[in-house]
Amino acid sequence: MFNTLTHPRLPTAALLLSTTTILCACGAKPPQQNAPPPTEVGVVTLTTQPVPLVRELPGRIGASLIAEVRPQVSGIIKQRLYQEGSQVRAGQALYQLDDALYRAALNTARAALASAQATVTAARQRARRSTELARTGTISAQENEANAAALGQAEAEVAAAEAELAAAEVRLGYSRITAPINGRIGRSSVTQGALVTANQDAALATIQQLDPIYVDLTQSSTEWLRLQRDLTSGKLERDGALQVRIVLEDGTPYPHTGQLQFSEVSVDPGTGSYALRVVIANPEKLLLPGMYVRALLDVGVRPQGLLAPQQGITRDAKGNAVAMMVNDEGKVEARTVRVTRTVGDQWLVEDGLEAGDRLIVSGLQKIKPGAPVTAVPAAPDSDVPASSGS
Image (cartoon, rainbow, N blue to C red; front, side, top):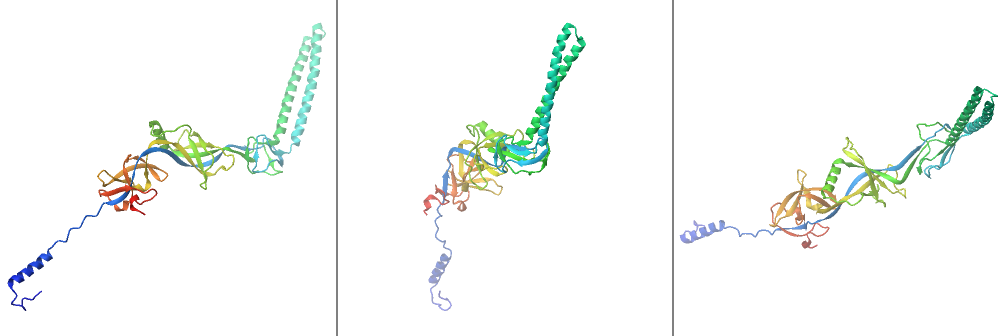
């Protein structure tokens, strides 16, 4: 710029033109920029479909039959007749007691019966002769009646001796302790030479039947009510008995399928749950009492189920499930939904969404409600839209 003081001859018009040009340049507006294009998001168009519903419950294995072996007579263990941990059958001998006293008692009862039978034979002969003599008047009627009473008493003594003999045989039989049921027997609590008593509190051994076997489950009463309501309304369909699959502690699926045998008739007031019992085959003896398992119950089929990918459902600050949708205007719409359970990697939607809705599953971090977006089908098993390339 020329200094007017050093150049007094500069025309005034030129000075004014230069000043005006500088002022116009300082107040000029920058050229207007174009608006950014709508954000591209991957969407999934929701559809209804039959959805099999599976409920997972924790469970414990229990034997279908349990029998504690106890002696019914007292005595010294003479011999153990089984191998601990083996499979036994009903009636198989497990322990042999010292039976010398019981055999002696049996022989005494046999002798007493023989004596009673001899007595009744003699009494029968006297009674027969007495009846004949009484007809001829040789003996009095009183004596005849006494002989008849003696015969009756002798016959009663025979009956008593027979009963005692039977009891002695039972006591002798009890000296050989047998298995009451089929099953696998555990370790013995006594050894040879131990004294056991009739009907003692401590069991000699325990037998458990493992095939079939029980799986005991617990389910909340609230869930049971919802299940019954869905079945009644037709929202859930079930055909036949409730099938149950088992997953072992190490995550291995159990090869056999069980069936629900019964459900408890009352709810535990402390936990708000009730018991379920499943019966299942166990030929390989993989399931053992006390083992923890997970039971998968095929509760039914939702004929018009609506599934939404999990990555498309988020939670707000209050914990409510929120889905970001692309509405008919091509803008983002936040919608509160209700989901109840997962089916694979998807949520089962109960309310808030319907078939035909376009759920945003990728690009969620770049959008907000009301923003215009470009919806493209989401790539399978990916968070990247299908049209965005590799």
